[in-house]
Length: 345
Ligand SMILES: NC(=O)C1=CN([C@@H]2O[C@H](COP(=O)(O)OP(=O)(O)OC[C@H]3O[C@@H](n4cnc5c(N)ncnc54)[C@H](OP(=O)(O)O)[C@@H]3O)[C@@H](O)[C@H]2O)C=CC1
Ligand SMILES: Nc1nc(=O)c2c([nH]1)NC[C@@H]1CN(c3ccc(C(=O)N[C@@H](CCC(=O)O)C(=O)O)cc3)C=[N+]21
Image (cartoon, rainbow, N blue to C red; front, side, top):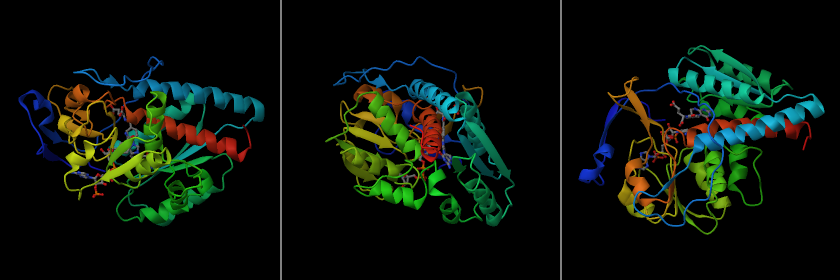
């Protein structure tokens, strides 16, 4: 996860009209706010883009719609079975950004009627202590989902910790068995990772055809890029993956009908990288210095939004794009888990 302080120049492309995308100072981990309700209707994207015509994909509004659907299902389940879905979140250490994410997840749970439990462990906890918490939640029937907030402190082995979560409660979808099943034809994971799932959900809800299209995923992390590429492939797209060792990423990206970018580099994807009419899902959340903002920074994506809207047919903003969908998908996975274990349809 990109988080340290550094300058980012765009080396690939520049034009006088795109100064906004040329230079940013990226700042350290930032807190998250949670959003207030937004209108819930969305319509299909235009087939072709003209100058400045891209549709802005409203993740905040779609996430609200998804949360409303979950609220209704949670109460239907509670009334029929008496069971309330429960999510346990384990936070180790005191990273400010992680604490804010966890607080937002908790608020989101409350907003849909899901029970939330939280374990806050100190930075210097041992791996064994974390494993003990996981084991407790694994055996607790009121807990249907377990999320270990990442990143973990560096003295812990992330693989050991993630492997310890029972796959039936792995609502993040990070367990190797879930990822393995996601990668295999004819197999299904119990849970799909929340951020990539949120990206696909946005494409579906905006009636973007994926089948037969060329998709490029920029980034190949275990939590976003790689599962996003697997999901697009499962949806019958033809997928290329661009990473830090890719030569000529611009040329490859320009072939895409659908771009999912999960890199952590502010404004890396410029207008010249985008095929006219492409649909862009920008996962990147990059804090950059902004003297005009009261906080002293603002969040930008991996994609230069000002340029992208002129070329693409649809694009997600940052903030208000994928971020809110990630949390909505976490709630959805927790509901799916509770329904599955109680055979409630
Ligand atoms: N909206 C949301 O809900 C979420 C947003 N995020 C955001 O998404 C971004 C990515 O997160 P995450 O996947 O965890 O990050 P990682 O740092 O784990 O992975 C970044 C990926 O980008 C690739 N990359 C880095 N630099 C370049 C470059 N110059 N050109 C091409 N590829 C490059 C890396 O390649 P290589 O593999 O070769 O090193 C790596 O695969 C971050 O901004 C993060 O904050 C993350 C999670 C959820
Ligand atoms: N086990 C685990 N699972 C995760 O899913 C996970 C994680 N660890 N570690 C950190 C990343 C990051 N992540 C985000 C979730 C929501 C927003 C989000 O809601 N963003 C708002 C920003 C709002 C603001 O701060 O202004 C938006 O984009 O609109 C962002 C990022 C989940 N992650």
